[in-house]
Length: 177
Image (cartoon, rainbow, N blue to C red; front, top):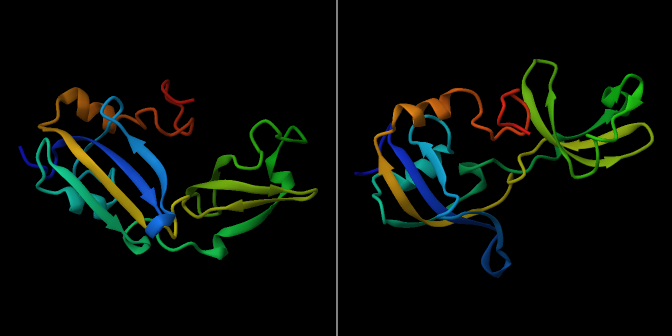
């Protein structure tokens, strides 16, 4: 069976970022812990899906996504200083959740949820970066298709009933941390 819309896909891959000899392994999905998704449901980058369209179980792939095809260019304007008091709980700064390097879910003035990385904490402000962690990066994918099949009802339900355990606590489901 070939990868096409509404097919269950399972694959392993290495994701390296950078150029030439400066590449760095950023992420790895293995045969033991593969990446699984339903093709065409918006779970993956469109450009990623286009590069694996029509492949079958056992096919290998290797492709590059430029920043404009993936997470966009890194934008300095998405690095912002926020008042430290917005991170207070009962009048005290939340040291447990807010620390340098931590990713935090935030809501903008329009009610949109964004993830931001805490870069620095000073006396009165918290410097946060709202760029995607892979913004500005050239992504090098290399891997193999492990399985392609019609999704079962259970597989469909696992992808459409909340986050599937991958949101790190943002959806209040049992599977989240």
